[in-house]
Length: 47
Image 1 (cartoon, rainbow, N blue to C red):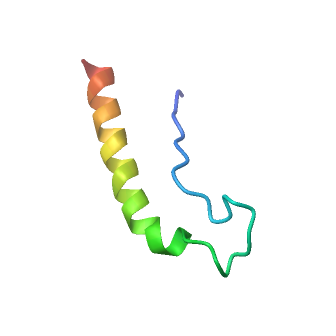
Image 2 (cartoon, one colour):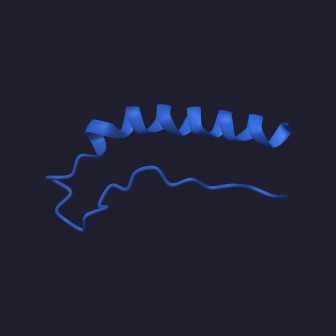
């Protein structure tokens, strides 16, 4: 079964301390953007 994975935000993307990372701050926005991008991508695939 074909599938597509889009990684939108890493909890330690900069390799720094998890105490200072911004993943918790932006996780909701990242999730909303990922959903929007996937909906558009699927619409483009279905023509």
